[in-house]
Figure (cartoon, rainbow, N blue to C red):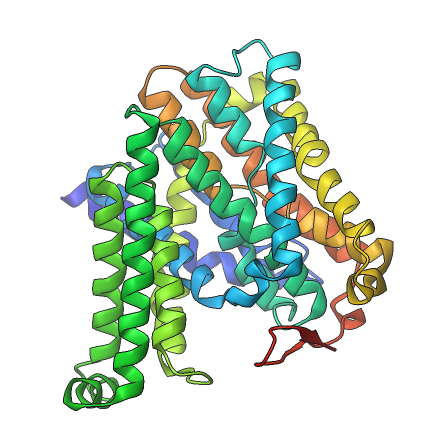
Length: 408
């Protein structure tokens, strides 16, 4: 227990120092996330060995990951991912999956059908939309035309790999996994509909929920945490990635919470970005073996290069071929910016490599290289995107209620 508190104190130290250091650097080119990962890697078991990855610390890290994706799911407007551009985003993700499968089969020493090959294939198709959210917020991009394109393509780069993980990396029969996924989605939709109708209908329970949020009861926050933990537990019970449950909780919240009500969001941001989410990134960094990374530099560079070719290029081509006037108006620089942002990858790379390592199909040192490559994309891609397109050049987006179209 003493070791756990010492580890937690050091994690809290890194979390508190990261924003200070990031803001001391002129123009803030390094995202706080990178500093959190680096601090964890330096103080983790592979170097200084003063942060121990015990079960209690790992559980808090999982809660941080879940909170990250709950907030990401809450921020995403369903009209974006189900609309015209969202459908293109899904189709483009399918193309990246096919390209990744071919690349792993042709250019690596692993079987594309083996567990390690499937893990690498899925990792090459990911977009860390959860990790991107704080960066996009910080740069004022979420409510812009550019931001809506990043979400349209990037969200499928998160959801697609989660579903692929459940189906391709599962030890169950594929039909059983698909049936469980369908049941999970159906349950989440029914829960969202029930919550939406309950909050709109009013009643005594509704009054208690909304009145209690202003008191020490913090009723709505407690119910939200119950929703998150229950769906994450359900995901874990059926051997699905916890990201799926967390995303579902975020989508449900978006339907339950009244529009323009920022009260709950402020409370959840305080819990998430104030404690749980930085903890997740620090612990993820502590799992990185920097010495193993230094021993395999070509694998590190090669993986990042493959990410760019397999993930960024198809998105750029898709946007360039899109006939929608608003998409075309972004121009080649805007299309490149969306593609670069969507090549940011990390949390799911941790997840897929962990599955392969646990099954004995991937060496931990190799997994460290892939996780480090994902961490580097969190630094490199937003930096490149900031160069290719400035936030000041974007125009706000307003959503029309009737048909879900975007209007600039």
